[in-house]
Amino acid sequence: EIVLTQSPGTLSLSPGERATLSCRASQSVTSSYLAWYQQKPGQAPRLLMSGASSRATGIPDRFSGSGSGTDFTLTITRLEPEDFAVYYCQQYGSSPYTFGQGTKLEIK
Amino acid sequence: EVQLVQSGAEVKKPGESLKISCKGSGYSFSTSWIGWVRQMPGKGLEWMGIIFPSDSDTRYSPSFQGQVTISAVKSINTAYLQWSSLKASDTAIYYCVRHVYGIDWGQGTLVTVSS
Image (cartoon, rainbow over all chains, first blue to last red):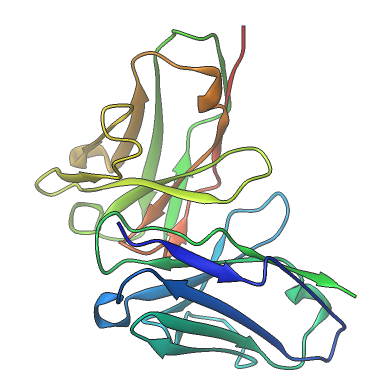
């Protein structure tokens, strides 16, 4: 089973700043089959990114994903107030399709 | 428009059985994987398992194998998650998701298990 470790656990930033979230896998993720999700309180998660770097429908271009192998990054340039939420990565290259533990992005 | 509509909240006692549902519409239900994700109170997301309705090919996380059963009835575009004997630790929100990664998510079903 691939274990995903997200860092940092909590990230405190101000609107307009840049956020960099990390997701590290315990072994290589097949074909960069890595997704990112955003979850706000009381809501279901929303897909942001698949294939490590392909934005889902309707996701603004201030969100970008990169990485391969065991190291992946979600970058949010110019944070908007609605971006403060919890972010999860998930690998779907090897069953079980595990999630990271999440990074909470909070307003500083 | 793709929709995944889940059954309503449940309150059960330990030892009771339960089956919750997820009805898909707006896409080809039979030929799209449907998965289940658990979120315990105040915690992160846990992948439980997945089913391909066309042939009922099912895969479970080792953490949930033997604890739950995932099934689907393609004629009514509905997937299920069931327990034969609930525990207090099963208290959580359960989400169904479309595809091997969650392109679309159901609204979640809150399951509360308490004596």
